[in-house]
Image (tube, rainbow, N blue to C red; front, side):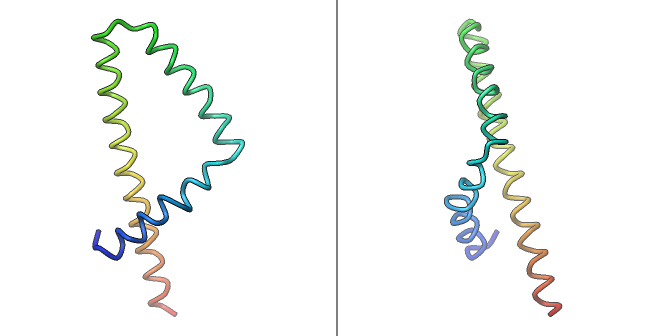
Length: 85
């Protein structure tokens, strides 16, 4: 991503993206997921808890890369559409 795209991406991520997560549908999915993770974390011994943390951190990195890829795709589609006008 170039500097211009990074600036737009960061702005969208910090303002627009988070606002779109404030929906009933997202909360209905997020709350049970968080409760389940909390129960799992409490039931594990420390070695397994550490492995779970590593897994979750890696999953978060993967999601961040997927989100960035979706943004780049949307950006390139918009650019092509604007060039065709």
